[in-house]
Length: 199
Length: 55
Image 1 (tube, helix red, strand yellow):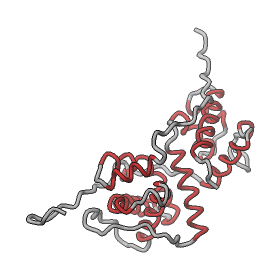
Image 2 (image 1 turned 90 degrees about the vertical axis):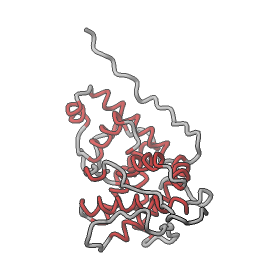
Image 3 (image 1 turned 180 degrees about the vertical axis):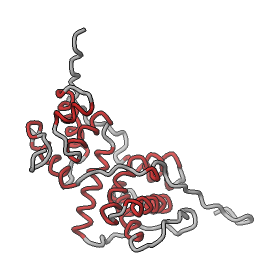
Image 4 (image 1 turned 30 degrees about the vertical axis):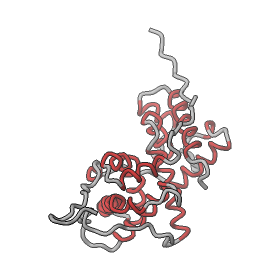
């Protein structure tokens, strides 16, 4: 049987979003207590928020508890989101960062009392400008990577953060080297679109 | 992996790719999720107490 030729996977069409800011749209739905929208936002941002918490807290258990607290804060505070003022991703980052900051120094795991606590309005003043901007960059990059299709995300993560060479990735995933390369290029092309303007 | 980053030099053949490459390196690893975070936290709609007028 003839070998299957690699698909030309690096021909990426920029994603077409019918909504200018899909995160902002989801936040508006969360403000109306739409659990499905909350679940979508959670899937999209849980790894970036956890990454943010891990960098701040340096402890996996505390970072996980802080991440839960951050999403409880997002649920509580969604009604304070003003789409005209900022993008949804920036608002999510600010609320998550503040919730994680509040978690610092707490000795006990978070008690999720999402319906009982007052809303947490996103502070307009970052606690430390440079740290906040570094955190924002990682948050945006991680959110963009987390949204890549899995066949592209996995080789990209292995290349950048797994310390693997292309040939090692090909062997680990059981894929031809050319497929690993085309998927990685495709992932980079998607990230060019998704991270436009980030610096 | 080279000391300058991942083994992707021949793929980074475009300025836009180079910018993405830089921010990926600066961002650092995206951590794997613990089981605790597999699902969203339980959240609830605040209920009005019995007898409260509707807003």
